[in-house]
Image (cartoon, rainbow, N blue to C red; front, side, top):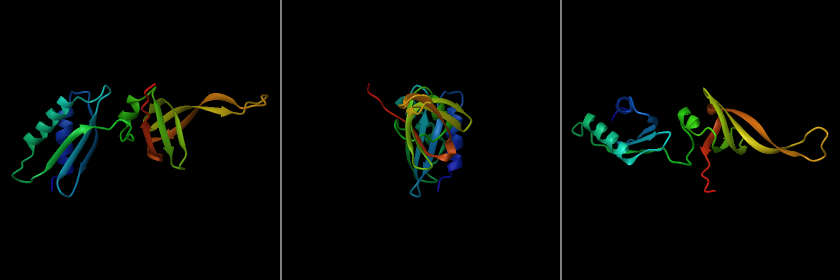
Length: 155
């Protein structure tokens, strides 16, 4: 079976000096390799082809037969790496926290594994009879949420 660390090293070598970043590598027991890359401005098919060719040049099919798939991290799929959070600052995201609460708001900031989402919600303000809609910041840790994903909007 092909070693995941070997594939990861090859991908990182190809990514060197490029603005792309690695999102995920999956290896199945039947030697299917799936590589997801991403870029702040989206992923070009030509670059996926180039990465695929680079990997094929460095892995021997004589030693092990494999199936290779290189693509972009799916838009609307949960984020897997911190760089994805950074790329979506200022955009609307959905967060499912560890308690099962779902919030939608604007990804305001990212620092390390921590991020803040600004949610427009009703808040009871002292001196007011009715709740007032306000932006409220919710702080999260990437490792303590079930998922965070970009909300695709056609407005």
